[in-house]
Amino acid sequence: VQSCARPICLVRRLREAGLAEARGDGIRPIVRDLLEVRRRLATMALERFAAQPDPAAADRVEAAVDRFAELMRGEPEDEEIVEADLDVIGVFLEATGSAVLGLCLNPVSFVVQALAPLREAIYADPDTNVAAYRLLVLWMRHPSRDAIGPVAAELEKRDARTLERVEGA
Image (cartoon, rainbow, N blue to C red):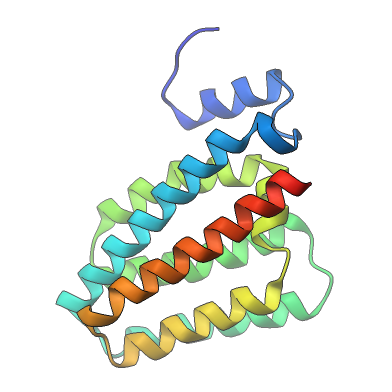
C-alpha cells in the first residue's frame, strides 16, 4: 500500500481495506486520533474566539443550530445531518477569523464523513448534539477563557462515549 497523507487517499485506502464500514477494533486507532484532532481544533477555535469575540456571531451560529435542530426532528439522511453539522461548525469557525482552523478541520471532517460507524456514533443521540451547540452559543454570548478547560474536558467525555459506541457497533 502506497503511503499518502491526503484525506482522499486515506479514505480510498480505508475503503479498499473494508474499514469504511468496519466495526470495533479495526477502526479504533483511527477514530481515537480523529476525535482527538477534532477536539484540539475545537479548543483552539474557542481560544481564538475568546481572544477576539464577535457578539453578532452568536446569532449566526444560533441560526445554524436552529437549522440543525429542525433537521434532526425529522428523519434526515446521513449526508443531510453531516452537512447541517458542518454548517454550524463552519459558521463558528468563520467567527474565529481564522481560515487556517477551517482548513485544518476539512480533512478531519472528510474522513469522519467516510467512516460510517463513526458518523453513526457521533449522531446517535441528536438531542445531545443540539444541546452542546446551544451551550456553545451561550458561551459565545459571554466568552470566557476560564471556561475553555471545562469545555475541553466535556468534549473529551463525549468523544469517549463516541468511541465506545464505535467499539460496540
